[in-house]
Image (cartoon, rainbow, N blue to C red; front, side):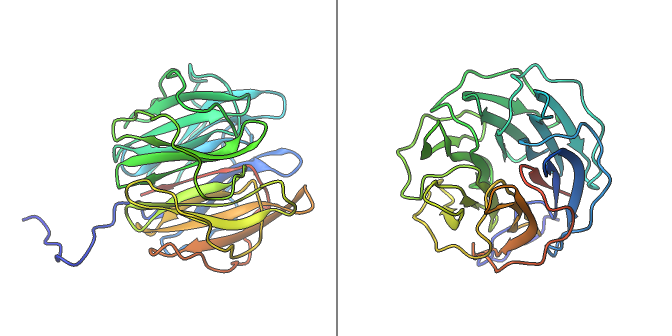
Length: 302
């Protein structure tokens, strides 16, 4: 028999655990930190794969994840590392046929596939990820070419890229359909234009962009909720340590977590995290666990 879901409930659609990985502290790292289904960040797991930063990560296959692209300091790369449904990171997959680049963003779509997109350079190309974790060649870019943006899921099977830099801070967004088609720019949101922010899903069908750098002074902690139709709302007053170069992921099926990043002055890194409830409320700082660093990726699994 099929399970019966009460009429007044909403089925969660996310994975149960998360992982932060790779990053930068003045040198490139490959360490990872698992996130439990209660939002607890674990100590460092010894790194697997090429140490790099400015990469992104997303879910695929319904219960697995993938880290991809980034910078090794020596050069931008297009290598990827698969994450099993037990949170184990695999060694490097051979470089994809996608354009090597860094400061990309990634999110899931279609419930079991993913997409990497954009990047400093500036690029608008995207690369689809199959439900077996295979990264496709470049898809011609749609929307404003930019880097240092963020992306997350919404509406259970769709995605959204948002914010970033073209050399100037921007706040436009690009929706991703449930078959991985990226739409043209939506008019700039009412949120603060900024870059080096992060985003994740929450509530089963909504998303949140948060933190980042807006050029007006110290980093920001503001957040912007994304509705289940992909509408980004105005700024919510920041909670927690203002920072940029952080990452975010879902956990516990319907909640999220922002973690790590760079605080002012530049080059001072943190490992603090901020939990996001299934109503999109961001909590105050949780004491950092693991190597303080920035420019990493994060995704959910299991």
